[in-house]
Amino acid sequence: MASNDTHSDDRVSTGTDGLDDVLDGGYVPGRNYMIHGQPGAGKTLLGLHFLTTCEPDENALYVNLGEPEADIRRDAERFGFDLDDVAFLDLSPSADFFTEDQSYDVFPSSEVEGDGVVADIVEGVREHEPDRVFVDPMTQFRYLSPDDYQFREQVLSFLQFMKERGTTVLFTSQDTSATPDDDLQFMSDGIVHLRYEEERRSLEVTKFRGSDFQGGEHAVRISDTGMTVFPKLRPGSHEATFAAEPLPSGVPAMDELLHGGLERGTISIISGPSGVGKTTTGTQFVKEAAGRGERSVIYMFEESRATFLERMRSINVPVEQMIDRGTLEVKEVEALEQSPAEFANDVRHEVEENDTKIVMVDGINGYRLAIQGDDDELTNELHSLGRYLQNMGVTTIFVSEMQSITGEFEATEENVSYLADNILFLRYIEFEGELQKAVGVLKKRASDFERTLRDFEITEHGLTVGGPLSELRGVLSGTPEWTEKKDEFGRED
Image 1 (cartoon, helix red, strand yellow):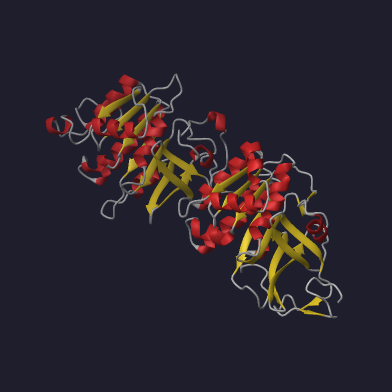
Image 2: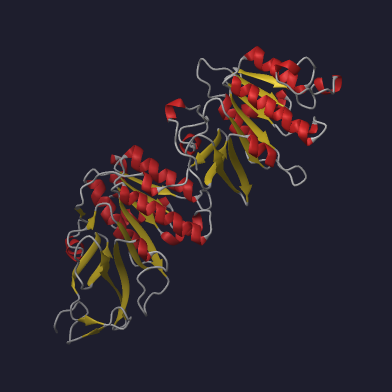
């Protein structure tokens, strides 16, 4: 990565949402950039965004050496691009030029008397005086040159001619095993790689002279409005000041267990087996914050939004009232519709644009199933997301489902407990032939906590937590016993 010697206000916007962030503000003016990728990766789209984002006093020129102008305009219209102000220099194989003359001169200006491709481009540049030029594809020059030496001379001469005029140039490359584009990569000031593999699109910048940039792979989505880039989340680049205070649940016994509640800006994991009440417990904290006027968001990975709202309605938790008030948002995430970076981008928007204070992810297993990526990548992305939310002072709740109903105790899934500042666990216990529930705290970094278990129940009036089960032993092993003769609620007979 180069040192940062330019500023965003000196940049040429890429026109592609998210890419300016990756490039520390955009392209450096007067330089040339290679767009590399296999067919269908989105190279031409990147060029169209670039050409149609001109300032009022800028001119744009599209030099098309592959597809005819009519085809490009038709495809651009499908994505909503307006090319009325973009000049075209159509040198595609279907153009008359290729049938009329096969001489292709090398220039600078002393050598442009011929009727070659390069001479035509020079003439077009002088006629239109463009500030932005897109050449698609530059590798077509290779097929119009007698040898590799002449090809490199033509490209170098062309790029130097553009640089002397202060023109910013994008050009695409069609790299194949038979004709690699290493020489073009060497000549370019920057390289943007577009990839389309296993239904996943990504972008990576590997060279960017004269400026810093964000390395690594960034997610890409192509929609009916063009291309969007989702920069990889870097938690260390984000920070906010906030008061480290406890956020109560609104259930007195739960808050006693947590010595006040969950601290602002911490990550909490609520774990337990299916049906024990994890989502309801997390929603209790979210609902309470929304009731105070703090915006909260719940991302549903394992349950439909409609089912969730119906369940909350049945136990008298006023989720819909908070949604109507605008302090709570419930978002259902469709399976395999997003990459980790896309999901993180949505969370960032909620935090930075909507001032969201609590984020709940329900749940970790669903996140791994619904978000595209392998297990290690998803764990790393979840870590980055949690650290980002911490840095921004957002209280985060991750719901983690455990497989075992009773038996030996497991606090959380493997590889996620290290994320948590707080671990609140819910547990089924079998006692005298009945299945009951208990809640406890395993970990709390920011304050002390009660080290007893409490009985836990979800009723038609919401979540209730009882007194400490101080006389009950063996709960975590799955075989609870009272130390003295007690009834099922811990009361002496």
